Image (cartoon, rainbow, N blue to C red):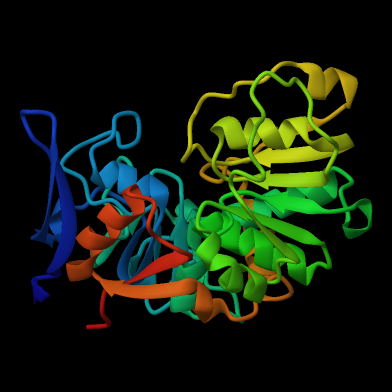
Amino acid sequence: MKEHAGIRSFRALVASREPGGGCRREIAMRSTDELPPGDLLVRVRWSGLNYKDALAAAGRRGVARVYPLTPGIDAAGVVVESSAADFSPGDSILSCGNDLGVSVPGGFGQYIRIPAAWALKLPSGLTERESMILGTAGFTAALSVRALRDDGVGPDRGDVLVTGASGGVGSFAVAILAREGYAVTAATGKIGEAGYLQGLGAKRVVSREEAGDVPGKALLSERWAGVIDTVGGGVLAAALKSTAHGGTVTACGNAMSAELPITVFPFILRGVRLLGIEATRCPSSVRKALWEKLAGEWKPRGLEDIAQSCTLDDLDARIEAMLRGETRGRAVVDLGTE
């Protein structure tokens, strides 16, 4: 990076749409005078790779709103300049969601400029790196656990299923539920990750097929008091069909499919409730409270076991691996400290 008259140049991953419909990614030099207006200029030190980031980096329609774009919906670092009363230069902050990495340059660049409302001072109990191991994935998992608890699904109600358990949201959901005393069944398409999931606290690990749907059946045997689904499609349909009377299912992802092939019978015959989880526009009061829990009582044991580090130069390969469904846990991106 170079600095001249208050303007800093920096490295960023930039995704650009090509005329033929593809998307090209490169590490490019950018300048802070190219960043949008905002209250805070932040030197990003760590970010994390989410499925939404991979889709944006691949140019998938309906994800990013503008190209060329620096993806990265998560960022943690240090405030360099501030026009907001609540933040000062030198403050460590994290930012997850809002329009970061969607319509404004995101955390895969060494600098971001954002509104103060998008930033949260780093809670004590978390380092910048740890906050990005968690990132939107950990926060979404926390929202999902909170939704189950608020809907009356406590540890005494019975087994809870987590689908897509070896992914980022799934890994954290397993870990947080286990810390809260739930009996967790982890469903994964990577059954070779059973040891990893048991280490996070899963009582039982099953294949995606074992937790899958039975075509033609409107209901399946009652198995789950609650479900945290991260993949959608037929897996979510099967979860709804096999949730016990009065149980609750949360849904936060569509890695398998955005379609939901199901009848109304789980809802009208068993009183099953389906709750949508959306982390991007979460109220600031809820966001702050949950990040405090993630820094404290919900901080997963063995947090580093969930993380795999990479740099900007490694990121393209990680994005491709995520799109192929070959990743586990969280890829945390080191953007340097200079």
